[in-house]
Every structure is written in C-alpha cells, then in structure tokens.
Image 1: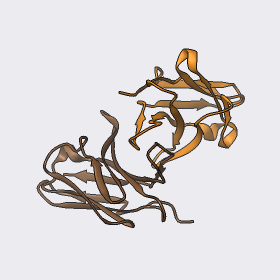
Image 2: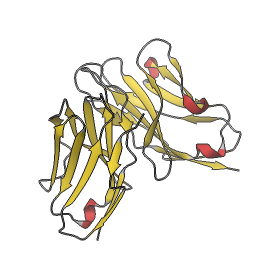
Image 3: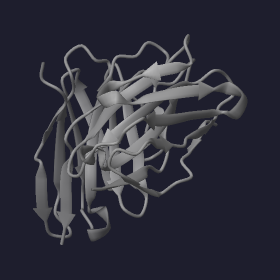
Image 4: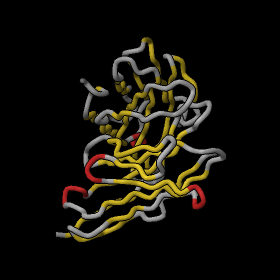
Length: 115
Length: 114
C-alpha cells in the first residue's frame, strides 16, 4: 500500500517567494496533520483536519501560513511570502480516527530551504 | 493539557548492550501512548502503541515498552541494541476522548558505538 505521499521532497526558494507543499494521505484515513520540524523547536503541530475540516490551527505560526484540504485525498500547506526562518522539514501525517487519537502515519517530509 | 517529557536528549550505548529510553506523560485519564523512531532524513515510523490491556507492549524491531500508571511512564526497552537502531526516538500521548492529535516529546537521540 502506498503510504503518505509528499511533494516536493526538497524545495529551495528565495525569501519572499510563495511555497506550496503537497500531501496525499493514506486512502481511507479521515484525519490529516501538518508538522514542522527544526533543530531549535523540535516537532511542532501546525494544523490538523478531520474529514477535510480544519479542527485546530493554533500551531500555524502566522498569517503567512495557510493550509487547505479540498478533498479527502489532497492537502496543501502554503507559505506566502516565505522567510529564511521558515526553513525546516515539513511532515504530513494521516490517521483513521473516530473521536480519539490513533496512530499517525508520516510521510517522508519536505525539506524547505529559504535563502 | 496533556504533555510528554523525555528527559534524555542524547544516549550512547554499545552495540549488544541493553537500552531503556524514558518517557513520562501527563494526562488526566488513561492515555493512549506511542513510540516512534526517526532515522536520518526519514519520516517518523511507529514502533509500538498502548491503548489498553496488557501493560507490556511488543513492537517492531525487537522493541517493547511498559506502561506504568503509578509512575506515569511508558519507557521503551530493547535487550540488545544493533548499530542500525541509531536514530531519534519520540514518545507521544494521545487523547482517549475528543480530539485526534498526538502530543510528542522532544525526542531522544540514540547513538550506538560499535
């Protein structure tokens, strides 16, 4: 079975540019999570969706970050404009949940470098 | 609010030695508990999980963990470490009612000496 798919795997961009990260969750999963991982701050939950609806976006750093989930098989995380401090590895994870936590399956991540 | 503490940032063990990684959680009810492993350049992979029942949980790659309610702990163990076990290990706690997110610890970096 295909796991969580993320694209691109690596992204290098210049400050001020728009960046879009993409995620395809595991088929049948109803929850999707976006994380950011840095050396300084570790693993941070940015936002998560349940049944395509954003449930908790309290981890989104600021208005430059936005996330969408137009359907059950696709989500995007957009940064506009990007800044060097956004450089990190961004993970998408999905799970099958029913009102309680369940194991999350992680994608391979997108390593973002903003110059 | 739930929280997870992994008190050891780095641990070094010799290959073949036993391993124990510590995890303490804070949660008002019986928690759901998880251990994940992250190899360099990779995403997180689930090692094992505890939902209920037997407090000693077996996972992949020869790992096990024991849930101790009295100590609010869920320590990860392996009797004999292999060089390929060098990675970062994350403990996480989940909600048993309402809310789907997991709260992760800060991770423990394991180094294995040959």
